[in-house]
Length: 249
Ligand SMILES: C[S@@+](CC[C@H](N)C(=O)[O-])C[C@H]1O[C@@H](n2cnc3c(N)ncnc32)[C@H](O)[C@@H]1O
Image (cartoon, rainbow, N blue to C red; front, side, top):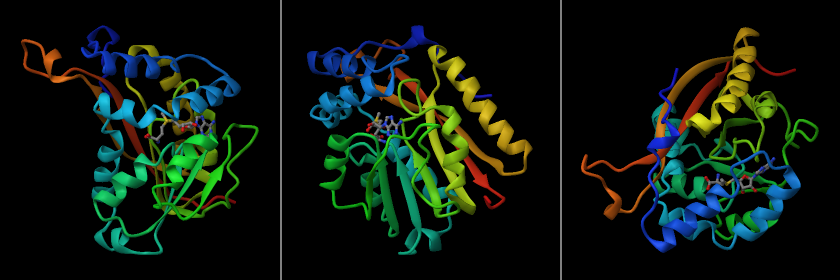
């Protein structure tokens, strides 16, 4: 079981800009419906990338680097290797992959057109699809289609629901990976239990096996906030990787 960072250990950012950025992150923590969430991203799309910079957001880099270690060098340089980035936002995952010379193809899927427009401007994706993923509206992709499916910081209460995990696994090729994050905080415990329930069900049916689980810093604070312990304090995310070991029908 992953270590959970207690909510009281979160530090407040110390500059006006970073305080405002954290406020925008916190505005979308809650049980909001999809309509509210998408309207919020219409607004946030204009500030999103600056907010990530202010808060020292490094999750896509962590995921890209660990994916590199999970895959073989020949996968990494294979121009026909395929990654689907679910909840792609403004394209941070594609930027992180390209920084470490991933040579294959990346498709993006996101429910918000303004976020996707920013992702498109990076010229790193093959296809970009606007689609709101829910249990009622599954992914518009074939089964067993992608070598890797990633979902970075989009599986949290107001965004993509744990009950969508089986559909996310459906589009992964047999032998491929699903790699996603959720929050590792007290406040996310019941959501995390729903994640585990879905994963355990797929494990028990012989569809997946567990490959890796790691806690990663999600946001860390400006240097002047570093405490007497000399450590940066952060909200944590947990990154979970599973391998698909049986093709979907
Ligand atoms: C916190 S952002 C993460 C973006 C990117 N992966 C990153 O790491 O910067 C979450 C993204 O998920 C998208 N999203 C939220 N709910 C969604 C859903 N049900 N289906 C598809 N995309 C969704 C939002 O529009 C937003 O762009």
